[in-house]
Image (cartoon, rainbow, N blue to C red; front, side, top):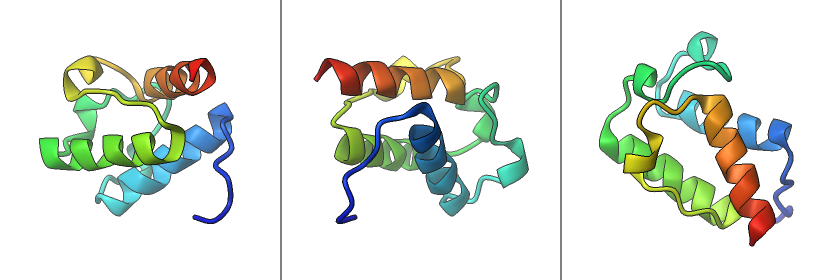
Amino acid sequence: MSNPTEVTPEAVHELLRSELVDLGVPEEIISAETTIDALEIDSLDIADLMVTVKRQYGVDIRRAELAGVTIGGLVDRVLAGATSS
């Protein structure tokens, strides 16, 4: 993690994809249209994912803000938060 984290849609999506695969989510179901709820990961895993997002991009997103949000929507939210900081 010595490299600065790039803030592009592709970089954010790749970070999320990598973290979700590490949490046991099958890679084939991870797409921009997939909702966070459809991933069937527990609240602790979601909390870990949001800690990673905060650590990498400085964007704090609460679990309650993720209801019905797609991975693409989460990418957009991270990009908006990272560029407004």
